[in-house]
Image 1: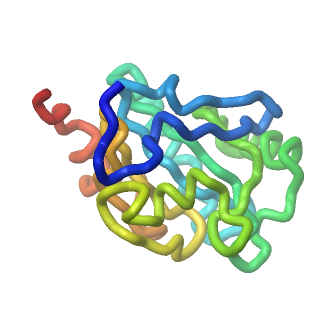
Image 2 (image 1 turned 90 degrees about the horizontal axis):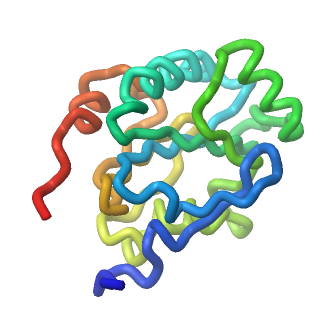
Image 3 (image 1 turned 180 degrees about the vertical axis):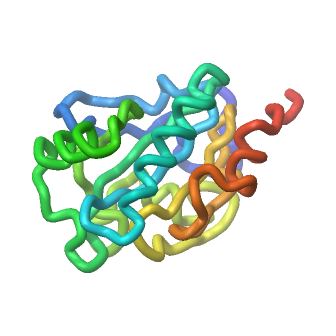
Length: 171
């Protein structure tokens, strides 16, 4: 296994728990572009679920996936249980992309995935703060963080779709 000199933990070493309580290893994402989004059901940006689902449907056959992490870190806009969140997303937005169990995306109890996403010494690109619900992190096919998009950047914007459509960097 080749290790990156700058990253102590690879993106593919990470794992999370799905909204259904199953273990999800990021190693299963090798070779795919991945958009990670912290989501909430009671946010002004919640309608982005519709565009996220459209984006997923559009590109999932091109080695692309979306991983959503419900989080209640901003104005208590995700108060629900995993079951309530899942039911809301399916009923209102027909969400079919992978949803993880509710986590924290900032503070002392920040989930390890978000520690990796927000700390340059772990991701090798840059430090960032999760500003609000629906912030987006794009990972390339080799597990490198390549872009951070603001919560207000619409999922179907050219800014995001151009990065997804871009061919993988040469080996």
